[in-house]
Image 1 (cartoon, rainbow, N blue to C red):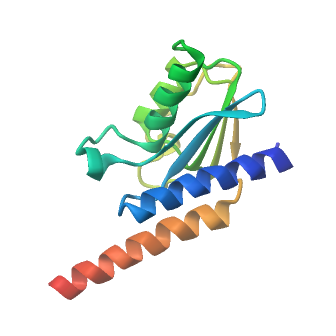
Image 2: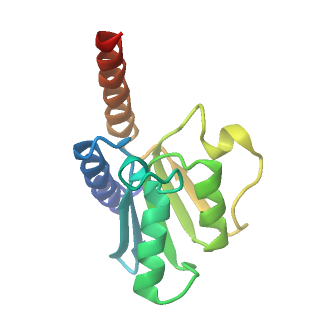
Length: 153
């Protein structure tokens, strides 16, 4: 169930997505929260790092694990602006994140489109937090990319 806390932290994830946008990256942002503190942040860095695995969730998970000093995030909530892909869903499962909250679905590459596999049985998934804002950011980014491409061609 969505709460004011979910909305607040999704706004923080949206700030990360805007950081990605400023770097001309696909604007997806993520924060990981434990005991009401952000312990990891990330945004897409695939272009900058020239690494297809540098998704927002992967960046935030790495930061959160470093903060906690371990590989498990069992008492944490991951907030991400777009539904995780299968790779990121796998990382979420491996780190045993307790709760996943995402903004907008990814109808092409989201984990729910590609697999029936789920997270740990105790992992709660909340969908649609600030969905309109998250979707609009993605749509406007790709519209600008298409217009730029059409101008070149």
